[in-house]
Image (cartoon, rainbow, N blue to C red; front, top):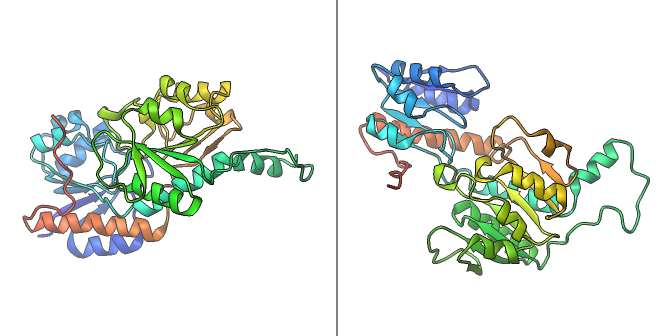
Amino acid sequence: MAPRLLITRRLPDAVLEAARAAFDVVVRDVERPLNGAEAAAALGEFDAIVPTLGDALDAEAFSRADPLRCTMLANFGVGYNHIDVAAARAAGVEVSNTPGAVTDATADIGLMLLLMAARRASAGEAMVRGGNWKGWAPTQLLGLHLGGRTLGVVGMGRIGRAIARRCHLALGMEVVFFNRSKVGDAGVAARQLDSLQALARCADAVVVALPGGAATRHMIGADFFAAMQSHAVFVNIARGDIIDEAALIGALESGAIAGAGLDVYAQEPRVPAALRALQNVTLLPHLGTNALEVRTQMGMMALENLRAWAQGLAPPNRVPEPAA
């Protein structure tokens, strides 16, 4: 009998077809994350789950699932801070994710946000859409030319490297970066700095590409923004709660930094009214991997992990053990 599988949000048709060929599939036809009660119920009802962003698979969900039937969480996405991996493993539940599939698509969004923030694209579009554009003028909406400037990357993993490569090779930017561990090869000429403050002081543009979770929550706050140059722009494509959102809003309102580009928020889908009111910030609805080809590849990678689990093998993209 095929393992009973819950897919918590609708995935591309090709992924669902492939899943149904191997598993007894239930697709949750609701476009919102699992809450705690729903997560606990699912853990007791299904052999495996394909969760994704926001599904409340925390320690309480595992403790409330009685009995616990699920033994595999094949996460759809590289980020898995919505899953308490330690609690899952303690309960005998394996966890995998989909790294690699999202790298280039997410890096593309990062580059787009850097350019939009630096060149004030959102303010310009709002001017045109609002019927307020009076024609070209020499000093209208002057922004920051990124060519030859310094890019600061926070988190030099797959996505950080991909962004550094794009900015260095396409825009001629010098690259500096901060990483919590030593990086031997960043893929392009780049200089590792020993502190976030050092990066903030020298970068003309900053992009955050860290994993989410307790270890990085509010890692970037008021001190970081105070150290940035007033002409600099800030981009976050990682997880919203890595940033102290109130501190970022204060820096944008005061002019301590010139602008920002955000694809993620601390309490998605809620975006603070103060952010939405600002003209010097570009706001996207978490578009990092929103291409059919990429989402299909992510789903197929999740299925690869599931097939390995079903055969009693280690998933090829097993999430590592949490740091002690």
